[in-house]
Image (tube, rainbow, N blue to C red; front, side, top):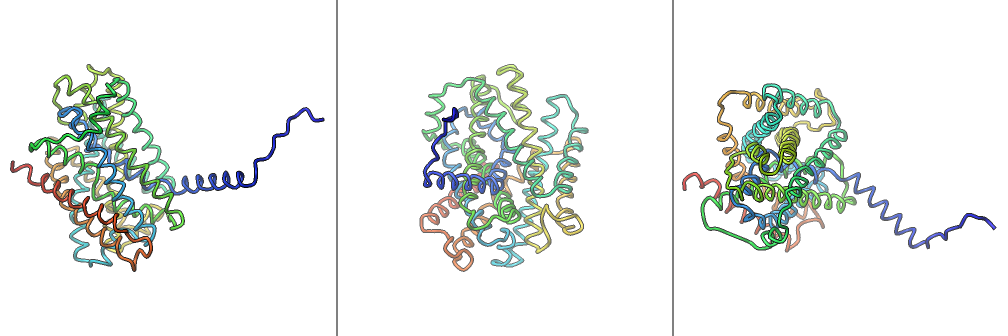
Length: 425
C-alpha cells in the first residue's frame, strides 16, 4: 500500500463549476481597464482639491453625497460602456453620425476648452506636489510633461493601460492617510448614511463641485474610446460592466478618505485652505509628516495620471468627431492629428503653468463652468443613442434605466446652473 494518501477527485459538476469560474476570472482580467482607469482619473488635482476643501470647510457634512454620486457614476459610465461594446464606435463618432457635423464641432470646442483648463490644473498639481518635496516647478513640470508624452506616443495600448492600472493602486496612499488619523468611525457612518443639506449658496456650490468633479464630460468619451480600442466583445460585456462598477466605487472610496482626513484634522482645527497643496502642508503639524507626505505623493500620482489621460481623452474625442485616425496602437505617421493634438495640449499646458503670476485659479474655474454647461448635452445625446433600437438592439435601455437616466440628467442640469450662476450671488 502506498504511503502517499490519494485524495479523491472532485465530482464532475464541481470541476466544471471551478473551470467556469477560472475562465470567467481570466476573461475579467483581459477586459478590465477602461472602467477602473476612467473613474480613478477623476481623482485628479482638481478633484483632490475639491474633496480637501469639502472636508476642511464643512467637516463630515458632505460625506452622504458620495453614495448617490457613486450610483449616478455607475449609471452613466455603464451606458457609455454598453454603447462602445455594442456599436464598436466611439461616442464622438456616434454623435457625428446621428446629430451631424455642426453640432459635433461645437461640442468638441466646448470639450477642448474644459479639458484644456483641466490639463493646466494637472500640471499645476505636479508643480505643487513636487514643491512640497523641495523640487522647483521649472524642473518637475518639464520632466513630468515629457514622461507622460513619451509614455503614450512611444507605447502600445496594452503597455500604457498597465501603467495606468498601477497608478490606480497608488491611490491607496489616501486611504492609508485617512485610517492613520484614527477617526471616530460611528460618527462617520452616521454622516455617510444621513443626508445633510444647507440652503446656502456656498454649501450648494461646494456640493455641486463635489458632484461635478466626479462626473465629467471627458469620462464618457475616454471610456467608450478605450472600450473600442481594447476590442471588448458583446459576449464579454458583463465583465466590462463589473470593471465600470469597481472603478466607480473605488474613486468614491478614495474621495471619502480625502474628505475624512481633512475633516478630522483641518476642520476640527479651524484651518482654512485653498488648494490640495495647502491641505498637504497643513496636515504636517496636525497628523504628522508621514501623513502629509502620503497626501502629497497621492497628489503627484493623481496629477501625472490625469495629465496623461485628459489630453488623450481630448485627442480621442476630437479626432473621432472629425473622422480622423485615432489610437495609441497606431504610429505617429498613421495618426498625425491624434498625436499632434495630444502633444499640443501637453506642451501648452506646461508652458502656462511655468508662466509667473498666471491666473491659474480663474482658468480652472472657467473650465469647470464649461464642464457644467457641456455635460448635460452629452448625457442627453447618450440617452438618445442608448435608446436607439436600430443601433443597440436588445441592449437598448429599459424603462427603469431611462427613468434613472432622465432623473440623473435633470439633477445634473440643475446643479450645473447653480455652478454657473454662483459668481453672481
